[in-house]
Amino acid sequence: MFASFLDGPKNVLLALDPPGDVVKGSSVTLTCSASGSHPPIQSYILFKDNTVVAQKNTMSISNVQPSDSGTYHCEAFNDIATVDSPPVTVDVHYGPKNVLLALDPPGDVVKGSSVTLTCSASGSHPPIQSYILFKDNTVVAQKNTMSISNVQPSDSGTYHCEAFNDIATVDSPPVTVDIHSPLRPNYCVPPEFYRMNSIMISPPQILYTPKAKVLYDCMVGYTSTGGRSDVTCMDGNWTPLTLTCEGQCGRHTDQNGITFAIIEGTLSRPGEHPWQVSLQRRRKETSNPFGHYCGGVLIASCWVLTAAHCIDSSMDMQVVVGGVDNGRHEESDQVIAVERDFIHVDFRKSTGSNDIALLQLSFTNGAFCANGTSYVKTACLPNKIFPDGKQCVISGWGKTKDANHPLRMSQGDVTLMSKQRCRDVYGALQVDNTMICAEDTMGKVNFCTGDSGGPLICKEDGVHYIAGLASWVNGSCSGQAPGVYANVHHHVNWISGCVATDGSLCRTQSVSDYDYTY
Image 1 (cartoon, helix red, strand yellow):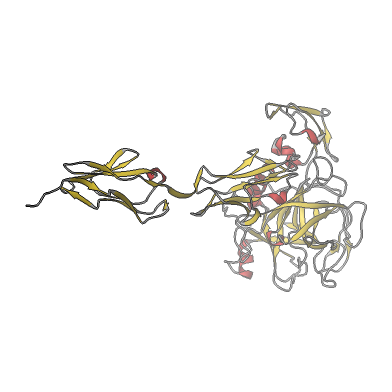
Image 2 (cartoon, helix red, strand yellow):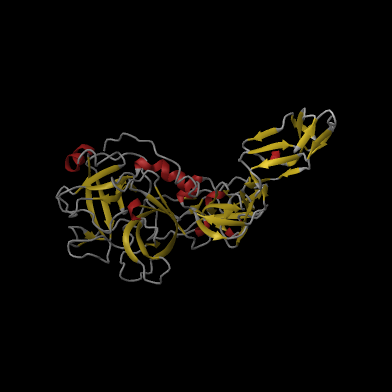
């Protein structure tokens, strides 16, 4: 006769499969077992933090999350006893969560100020081992914080950070840092005053001081009808400005040119084209002399229009305005560094479409860049489409019949021609609505290398308007074929938006595709 010994479950254990660290997003199985039981085990129960999670001996978890972390155990039950397993801790590991790059102080970043970029995460297990900060996808700091003092336009860019632990490397969303200049007049002056280039602020250093009083006067070349005026900054807003300045773009004293054969043009005399700019460049981070390579036209104290294809990001740029001889320094010269450039968002180098760009100049005199004189004035943006057959003038320091690099500014008369006639020469697909054409009816005058970006000026009722910017011409620069120019009237809204917003709309605002007949 055999004796039957009754006993509860023995060696009850809860096993984790796979064993080891549990990583967020993985899958695991918890299994409860016993080495023996008499009578047999009737049921199993699985617990998490002493709360029932399964009434069976196994439980699988797919796509594990941090919320699945906890202390698990199981019970095995028969008629004799209920036996608990030792606890099993499930500690879910995960990469950095909610990685963010914060800019302090937030909002607009002003040139000359200081900012701090800080990378943070809301959680990480195991802890974050390192941070890396990037500017335009280039490493700038291998830590979670970076301070920039005396912020400059070169600090503009797209920043982001990476947070790293043994589980994952996680990127923050990008943060765009766009440096604003603190002295631009249009922060406090209505845009039309700024575009007229007629307001002077004194002293400009207090523009951003709370409750500051700022005195306005007219710039050189303009007169005030009622004396100077001041505005006061209250709660971040300026009181209205009552100053009115008399003056107008596009006017100068007419002068006669001296006959000189440069693609059958004439030499320009001082003050004859006071809006004409010599755009000069040199390789960055060198002390080489600047050299002329394109033209441009002054439209406001701190703004120059030129051709988009003249912009080269590998170069430092400056403009010289007021003189006519690039071979020597003239008393009328004003040399001004280019602070920023804005290429039209729809410029296509392959076709020449929208071949227009704006240059923002550096300050030289308080709130001004170029200062108005008898030799330095602004040309007007066109308020109409000029008719076919109208005689206009081009100017610049481009290649001539007798010299590859002439030092003296030259000029020549050309006549606006219809789109159809221009297309007959170059083809319908090459001449679009962002372009206009002009020719010398005698087949002699044209622009050439070094004239790009320079103005095509049309005079109406004594006022000089920028009809076009020299863009492209047939390979020989012969006057037998028309010159093709960026159509400035087509881009007036883009130009005005750029200037009125201190450049913030330049890269985002498109221009409607008007169907001009010219």
